[in-house]
Length: 208
Image (cartoon, rainbow, N blue to C red; front, side, top):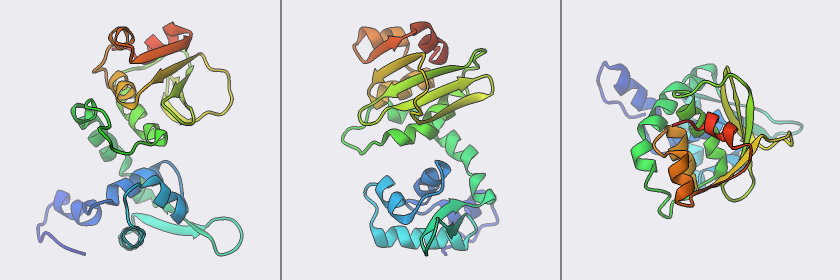
């Protein structure tokens, strides 16, 4: 492991998670424990040998652990309690990235599952709802489900429950709404967002 040779918390943190791909591996594991193949699929562009090296380093540092996944010799990777504490700094980086994300994907890979970390990080800093609301987000592929309650916001796979509304939009528009950088009325006027269901619920969740 490379060292900066500095007695500084930031320097020592970067020695553990500062290498290319490390924080993106943590991002995937913040979504839940995953098998090696699932991690490879969720990290477009990473070479299989590099993923193995990064997992080995993160495990040696105490950020990641391996554990059995069902019967047989199959294992899955999960964050240790210390590794899970990276959620807050990663959420802060997501909020900091807002000006960068408004440019849109520009050919980059996108997976709807990444919204499970990004949207709550953006919304939790801005809103607090009094009445629980469930909104479907359709951004190509399988829809995801946003659940807003007085205790916070979660985003995950659609679980079949009744939706108060459904929002259809591109990734940049959803992130812009969540960050408060894009007003819902402007997004609709520009044709960036379509809403089915109770529009007042969408306005409560994505209040600018």
